[in-house]
Length: 351
Image (tube, rainbow, N blue to C red; front, side):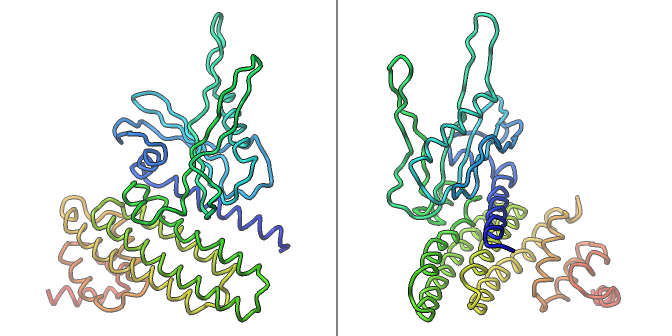
C-alpha cells in the first residue's frame, strides 16, 4: 500500500473512531451535547437525536473528523449542532467553519412564502482541538462586512482538549471524550520520529513518551472505574469507550512504537485486567438484582463471557455455582465459564 493510501486509510479509521463517541447511549450523547454547548437538556425532553454528515465541501486539510452535525428534536423545539475535531490550526479554519455553517443553514432554510423573508439559521458550532498549540485561543473569529457597510464578528467557540484531564472530563460529564486522552501523545511521537536524532536517541525518547502514555491510560481507567461503580457509565458505553481507547493505542503503537512490544502488552493487559473482574463482578451483582424477575440481561451475560474469555481462569467453579444458584440455564453457564456441561452438572450436585 502506498504511503498516501495508508495515511488516507488511517485517517478514515480515525474518523470512524471519533464518530463512535457521538453514537453512545442516549444519556451519554445528551450529556455530551450539554457539556460541549452549555445546554441543560433533560433526557425526558429529548424526543430523538439525528446525525448528519455534510459532504458539500471537499478539502485536503489535516482534519480528523469534519462536519459532524446533530439535530435534537425536543419538547422545546428543534436544535442543530456542528462539532469539528481538529489537530492543526490555520488562518482558514474559521472561514471553513463559516462555510460549513452557511451550507447547513442553506440546507435548512426556513420560509419563503409571500411577505416572509427566508431565514438562514446557522447551527451552534464548536471546534475541539486535540493537540497542544498555545496559539489557539478560546474562539476562532473573523470580521464580516456586509454590503451596506456594517460589520459583524463571526465567532466559533473552541475547546482546548489538551488542557483537560480525565478528572476535568468527569466533572464536565464529557464521558464520551475520555479515550481521546491518549491521543495527546501523537504530536510528540510524530515530532520525535521526524527528528534528526540518532535511532538510539529516538528509541529512548519514544520509550519515555510511551511511559507517559501508560500513566495517561491508568488515570483514564481510574475515572472510568469510578463512573461504572457509581452507575454513571452503562456497561455498553464502557465497552465501546474502551474499544476506542484500544484502537487509538493500536494506531500509536503501529506508527511509532513497533519496537515496544512489551510496553504494548503491558498497556493491553492493563485494560484487560480492568475489564475482566469488573465484568464478572458487575454481571453477578446485576444478575442477583434482576435474575429472579427478568433473567440475566444479555449485556450482563456478554460481560461475564468476555471477562472469563480474557483470562480469568481461577474461580470458574465459584462463578458457575453462583449462576446455578440464580437458576441460570446450564447452556449459558457453559458458554460463560468454559466448563463442560458435565462439570457444571457435578457442581450442581455439590450444591
